Image (cartoon, helix red, strand yellow):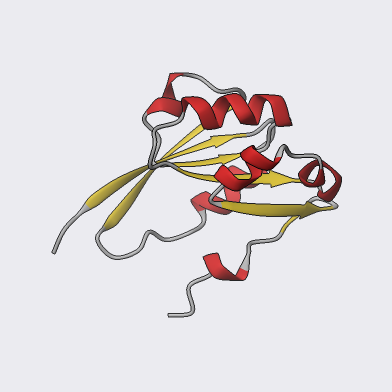
Length: 113
């Protein structure tokens, strides 16, 4: 069986997203290396998965600087998500809408066993 270590970079000003992701068990054959940053740094270039809570302009720069096959999940309030540039929106792997301090995980990301 193969074994793969995923580097997951979480860009957020608070720990809610980090806490939610760190509570998830890796799938068989995987392990997670979780990195929490308040702003983008060199880890953007090496991360396999980037979960972020950033403004549109910073998000566009992040998309440009991330590695080509990185999965990018943007977490935002509904009004922020609506203001995303179309090109940036299309480059995202997923969009997670945050409603009043609650993180909603899209059904497609939830494993049903």
